[in-house]
Image (cartoon, rainbow, N blue to C red; front, side, top):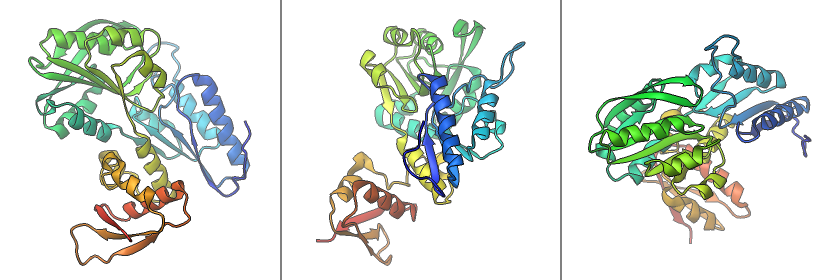
Length: 345
């Protein structure tokens, strides 16, 4: 690994997800962190959308490793000053670090997808495939003002579920399974079968991290899912080609905004509950960005709904698309209110 340009005194962000060839990727991340640190970077932040070894967060049997703690130690020793991640499998992993950790949540993006893509969402039931996800599910159900249910599972071997018990009513309802992670998909596929047998009219699965290893894709293809929705914390292009039920929620903007706020010393906690809502001026279908991208000279910005708010000019001549985008984000983040825009003719 070699850093191609000077990072002396710079605020460095290294993005690497814990997926694919996980050990190679982790080692590459550690080497890059260390290379930037000894090259006199002022701060090095590791942006890890899917945290590696997050499921080994406790010693649940004799001689079992706590690998999540080991990874935390390795990142700190390599020289990381800050960690940004999303939907940790166990929130206590944050306590494994002696450096700041921002654990972002995909929940706002999940809520947005449900409202926009499921017509019957007002009468749906949010279901947790295990008792450990009850807090996550109740939070989503409360914000949608709908019912929730959970499935208690008895597991004897890893990735094998022996018996499931549904607690809650899904009869004649749309059931939405919500979980942070799916690996071989045995749990969610058995859960879907249980929900259909209990009278659910449709079953969706929404996951933050879609690992989809081993027989996962064939199980999804054969299961009673309308759709299996995952975020892109893990690249899913090859999986989408193998299974037309898989849909992807893009959370790159949430990570990008977290990086921008961290770099500028702004609060990141707003993203925990709101995601990008209000932060990027409700970029519905990216209309504002398209308009802004096409402008070549300058724009006049005014605040919607306040006639007395003074307008001001934003010069964009000579800026490349990336610089335009950064400028737009700074304009938007100056206030949580929406802006309307008028191109200066």
